[in-house]
Each structure stands twice: as structure tokens, then as C-alpha cells.
Length: 339
Image (cartoon, rainbow, N blue to C red; front, top):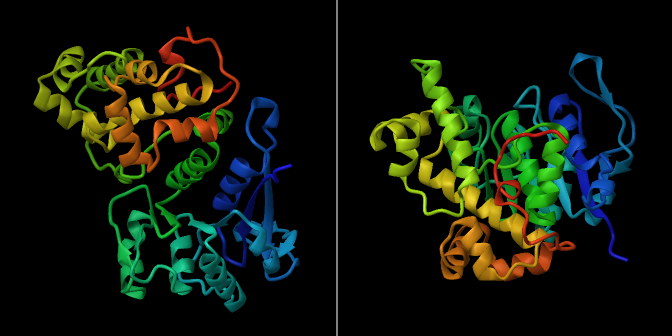
């Protein structure tokens, strides 16, 4: 019998309680009754004595660093003081884990821990937008990306601040266990199940001139999700919002941190993923329902965004098929609906 997916939360004095909570909420809750695969989450430290955190909180480790060789994924929380030196045994253990090929992820200021270990030297990494200059100053060999939610380089993932840590955790679930598992976890957390890593992490824009503009953009996104199977264009969406194409694109990017075309492609990919997981529809029909027009186009976008093919994705993540007549609106979208 295949073992549960093993996740190690690495802890030492100074890790952020918020990030510890996010990691625990994503991988520490049993949601197998809702179709989510089983996870085996352990809190790993140099020893099993309580780890102090800010606000009088403590974390009780249940494994020592020797357990890391069994982990499928290692996650590093952010830090309250971003220059906190990690214990040497932790840094050594992370180096060995990367050499073994274990996936490693750091949330927010956790990138500083990976940088201390030398794992980010010559690699691309991200952290909270307010810490970018600090990371560059203290670790000049790191290629710091200033504007992203999360990125990967050589099986090492880093994320921006707070909410982006949730996005990365859900993305890691999506990558290893499929879009449906990630969406189920997101619904239980009442958060959006899908934000791409390339989206801007800090959207600096004035309050919309009127509530009507904000409502119009929300209505357009809902309309698009209901009509993904149609050949939507920017002009179509702009007309739906009652704006010119140029004005619509500007307002949309300011409000969401991504362009309308990129957002639409992300939603089509998410829709195709769910159809591949949950139905036995033939590939041309999956492509049609998700709005790709052809199987060839869908395959090209899967290769570009997911580094896999639709057929390989179905083979990896397919569950018992549901009715092929299921409406498309239930296979797409990013509304955080609690169920």
C-alpha cells in the first residue's frame, strides 16, 4: 500500500506562528472523507523540546532532523526576525535533503533560512515585497525576483508574504495531488483555490472611482467562468463591463495583478484539470468545454504551464468519473466557496 504523502514542517526558535498554522491547516487536517489524499505531517526540529514562538506560543516537535530523509516535502516557515540564524544542524539537513532531490519550500522570510544554507545561491527566489532589498543585501548571490507570489528553481520553492504562503501550499498540493484536492482544501479554508505564481504580490492602486467599476469587473469574471467554453476575447469582456478594451485591461490588471488574457488562460487550465480528474470525457471534449478550441492548443498550454500533457495529468490524478453532463461552471473558477 502506498504511503501517505509525508510533509516535514521544520521548526527552530523564531519561526512565525502564522506560517506554522498555514502549513498545519493545509497538510495536518484529515480530509480523506472528502476525497483528499492522506497526509503525514510532522513537526521536525533538532530535538523534541518545545520551540518558542512570538506571543508566548510554543511548538512541540514530534520528530528530529533524522526524519527528513523520509519526507516527500519539506516546508520552512517564515521568521519573526528575518535575520535569525538557523541552527547549523538544520542548515546541514536542508543541504542533504536538496542533494537527495527532496522538494523544499519556504514561506515568506523562510527564504532567508534557505539562503543561509546556500541553497539559493545562483537561483531565483522571492520573499515578501518589503524584504526584497534585505535579502539582496545579505545574500547577494541570490537572484531575487521582485514581483511574484511564488516561484520554483531546482525543486526549491519560495513564496512572498502571508497570503502568498497559502497560495504556494495549495499549489504544492495541486502539483502533487491534483486540482480537485487543492480546491477541496481551499474550500475548507474559505480561500481562493487558484492564484498563479506570476501574479503580482503587491497591487498598488487607488480605490476604484466608483463601486460600479469594481462590481463590473467582478461581474465580468463571473460571466467568463460561466462561458469558458466560448471563444472569449478582451473586446467581449470589455463590452460586458461597459468599458473600452484598453480601459478594461488597465482596470483589470490594477484590480487583480494579472492581465485579462493570463487570467482567462489560468481559468481554462483549471477547468481542464478538473474535467480530466473528475470525468472520462474524451480529450477533444475537455478542450472544448475548457475553451481551448482544440486538443492541440490545450496540450500546448499544459506543456507550457504544467510541464505535462493532459493525458499524463489524467493518468496521475483521475478519480471515479462523474456525470459527463455536469455543467462547466462547477469545474472552473476561483471563488472561495465554503462547503
